[in-house]
Length: 125
Image (cartoon, rainbow, N blue to C red; front, side, top):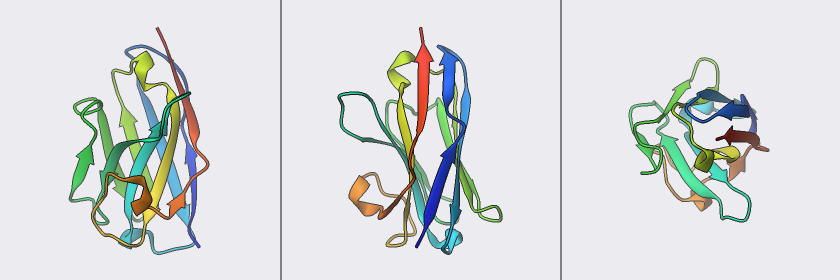
């Protein structure tokens, strides 16, 4: 069973940056595609970014392209989400997810059987 623990969330002013981390345990991290999703109050969970198992392929939601960067360190069993130029619209709970079904990232949540508990990101205007 894979366990995922996110960290790095917090309160930041618009235009600021945060770096989220997601530490994985209990599985073969280097074989998993990883994704970041977010859910704002009153909204459905949405895709943010995904990365293939070897880190060579990345994909992003249009709303975060050019501002967010997903990366991973397979030696540390950790995936990251660097978020720059944050806006209040980025306020949400951010979740990382792992898939042992695919080696390339997917944009849909049901591709990922394993999820973290989420970390809150709040961007003030």
